Image 1 (cartoon, helix red, strand yellow):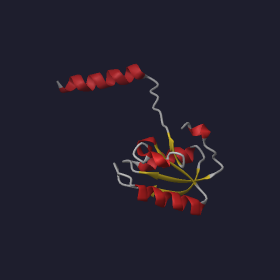
Image 2: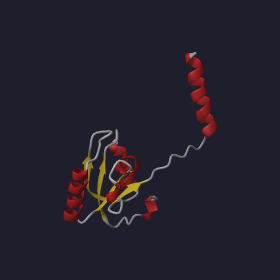
Image 3: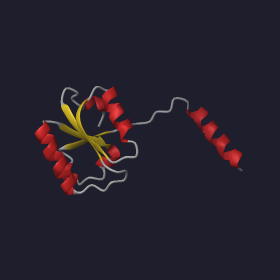
Image 4: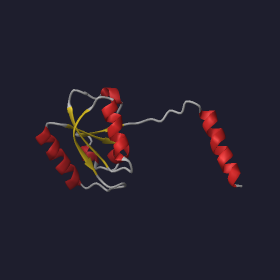
Length: 111
């Protein structure tokens, strides 16, 4: 989902199971999301339906919407798609040629 499609006046419960969950939270804070609860799982965590039901129950108690990363979203059961939303993050490289030249140089230095 596009970051602008979220209602930033709502409360959000966020969860993630990625290597650096702080970056996910920082992006949301930078974009003025009102985060009232964060749940961090280990990297590459395999979500069970029980995990999702617990998150959903907690979000109801907190009157919060649920948001996660796209990486985590694809790992949850489809039956939760209407309740749990994800933040789609795109990477834009401003100077692609400079990056490619740098990478090529590093590769050639090794050989």
